[in-house]
Amino acid sequence: MNLSGATLLGFTGIYILAIVGLALWAAARERRGLAAHHDPREEHELGGRSLGFFVLLGTLYATQYSGNSFIGFTGKAAREGYAFLGGPLFMQSVIVGYLLFAPALFRLSRRHRYRTPGDFYLHRFEHRGLHMLASAIMLFALLNFVLSQLVAIGQLTLVLGRDNAIHPAWGIMTLAVVMATYENVGGMRAVAWTDLLQGALLFLGVVGLFFVIETSFGGFAQALVVFRENWPEKLRPPDARGLTQWFGSIMLFVGGAAVYPQAIQRIYSADSARSLRRSMAIMGLMPLLTTLPLVLVGIFAQSRAGSTVLSGDRAMPFLLDLISATPLGAVVSLMVLGGAVAAMMSTADSALLTTSSIVNRDWLERYVIPNREPQFYLRIAKICTWVVVLPLGLFATWSVSAGITIWQILSIKLELLMQTAPALWVGIRSDRLTGNRAFIGMLLGSAFTVACWVLSVHSETGAIALFVPAHTQAEWSTARAPLGLQAGVWGLGLNLLICLGGIYSRPRSRSVVA
Amino acid sequence: MPPARQTRDARDAHDEKDDVAAKPEVPPWVWIVFTLIYLITIPWYLSRDWIDPTFWAFPAWSTVMVGGATALAAFNAYVFLRHWPDDDEDGDSMEDGQASRAGDSMEDGE
Image (cartoon, rainbow over all chains, first blue to last red; front, side):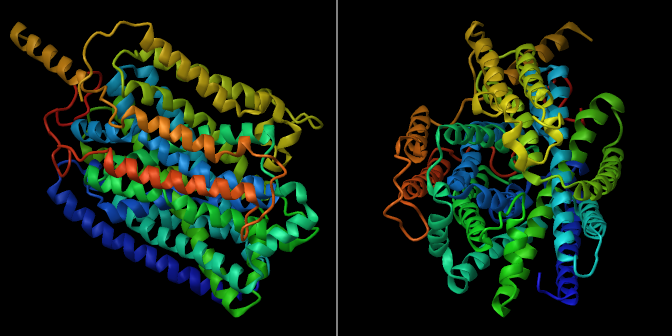
């Protein structure tokens, strides 16, 4: 990238100062909240359930759009061409997925003071096995989230710092420490307010990139011409196999991305149903204003790379290199850089807070060290943040060297996370679904998904699919995606059938009351 | 524990349990409309050769898709704003003493 080390360092410094300033302000608000609130954990984990429309929208947006949007989506669009225009539709499906449970879950969370997604499972089903399994899956997904964002930060550091020989560990560990610190001092308020800033940066980065390409670098219509000449096959709509994958991806986002535990905590944190539904209504528009431009940007990057195929997630770094050659492009590059880092940090910090919340609430408070003072658990939650982030930071540093790509990591966590959805969808509507049946459904759905991943091996090397970079997918996809459909979607179908079978085979015992 | 107290606790737990499974608030016809929008938006029925005419940066087939995605966003917004009514849980109306006694308590103060 054609930006000097001093410019990058100065920009990063200003960004970190702004984040820390916002976090300190949020911490002061949390202290006032703590004085007024009887439970400090609710204040720390959910911001005292007081997030209004604007902050809620910012934090939902910044949490939902991660490093994967900037790096993974553009990389995939560069590789697949116009057939990846389904990307915005996938992201819209997340909001459709919220409609399946959010209105009822919000009401229940207020009435019964849920703090984690696990609270619902335990309260509704009274089944500890189900509660522990759902919490374990969520925890796995959350750790995966934090790790994938730290890996993305490392990859960005690697690209930006290559002229100055900056090791990825610097970027990863600096931002990890900043995140853990502001989360410790300000809890959910700090995370949500910094998310608002990060969401604004993310959006500005996308808009800036879109306009500079359209006005100064030949535009997106030109990319279409280049694709027609060089890769006409990539101009076509998806074939039967591609459509199957589209269907799978829509299910993956309806079932998996809509039940992100950190997003569910944001539902709990809303100050009112009015704020929540207005935020969600606008979130439905954001894929058209964020994902769609980023897909076009990925396609444009490949059109400018010519015969060089932008494999893996190399589209965005290539593009930043390209546009930073002009003064306007350099400014936009900084905006994109800020947006990308903001997207990564905002997703990671939310996942980090929810991780400590689940460890604390769902495991320690309930099973390991119950009946202690709220202040004790609050201290544990803060320690937990550090215990999680520091080892993951070291692991991420190793991962960057090993070349693990983001899309791969996203796939497995979503496919497992979606196994928690049927119990939520069905259990929130019907009192006839029993805990045992929901547990069996979740267990079998998860076991099937993991088995497919583990049994799927690389055709030449024999390596387990889980550890093969994403762009070699075609060589090992048979067991990973039976009949072309992701294993997790098959698992979800099995899981849902078991849950639905439960409600239709059992007589209705009493009326369902809102 | 006296029998009278046991009876009251059991009744309270039953009443609270009733509302754990809550009514879906989105009317069923909404899901039919969503399905129709998806069926129109996903290009399963379009010819794979339908590239021309192109519109700005989009091959012909993808304009149908982008149009469908726009309709999905608009309908999404409509459903969230019109079919998710404000209810009595707005504001700070949490019922402090109303935690479940089913399984582990939702309230630590109990």
